[in-house]
Image 1: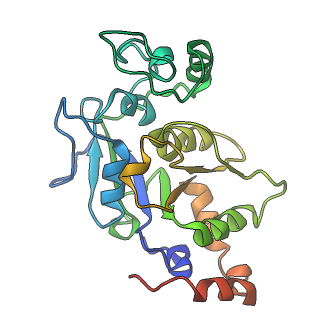
Image 2 (image 1 turned 90 degrees about the vertical axis):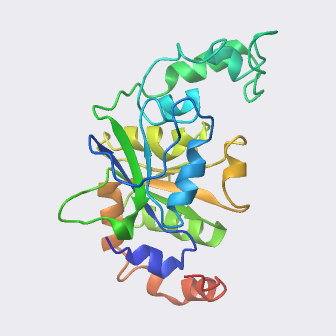
Length: 248
């Protein structure tokens, strides 16, 4: 799949297709069972041309099972998700992350996340340009982008739509914002794009200045079709585009 958007935005990082499948790709990057790591680290590797695969046992961390849609409960989080996200439960349990003030608020946050159990064994992430359109179609498209490029994506996402909130920046883990929340959006009649990677724990896995912008495949196809005739062919964008380095 060739992305006109990626070309116009001069993306440094390859846009990614995220697919739910029962077929495990050969030679894909994958955490070993029991190995600790951040889901976003493998997404970052994919943005440089690799293919990454996850199963419920190779997510790298307990939260990854939730963020990638392999489970909709939190029984596997040591000490409980409410304490893990907030104050911690005390000696013998992991230190609380301090992202939410109290366990009660953390439980409320977890309870309102979409409840999703994907029906496949694997989540596969790879560059769009490596996807064979005749044989596979991703469910989500993920862009890793910098501020000028993010600005263009936000404008393009609103280009054919009414309202001003067709793009959201929700609080959540990195894997929530690149998978769980956009996948939930795909079930809506008017899905929204999700800006992510504001998760402090995930930030070390990406370069400074990089955020994610994830859309369901149908919304991505609309945005691709809207490039001709849009602001991306006008003077103001060209001023911005000229200062984006040629990196690919």
